[in-house]
Image: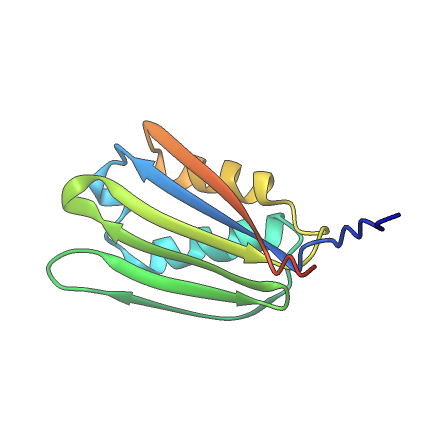
Length: 122
């Protein structure tokens, strides 16, 4: 008889596309950083550090490093678009809470979401 071993993934990678955001929500690196740090805090993640950069004339890129992995973003204000990436290796981090907060801050008209299990070793 063959034994089937199911192991829990090492982490979950959530990929989000925020479309139709007001451009002014995507240009200020300080405001975007504050939104992401607060999203991490509200989701029960442990913030280690963050780095955000404004690209003149368009966009912000940034990452919040959390003990459980990271939250990152790249914005294209001229297209009303934000590419958001969450990776976490903890079931204690509530990604839905983080997404809800970012939706309030960035005000997308549409959100596309994909989840990928990472580190599924057999």
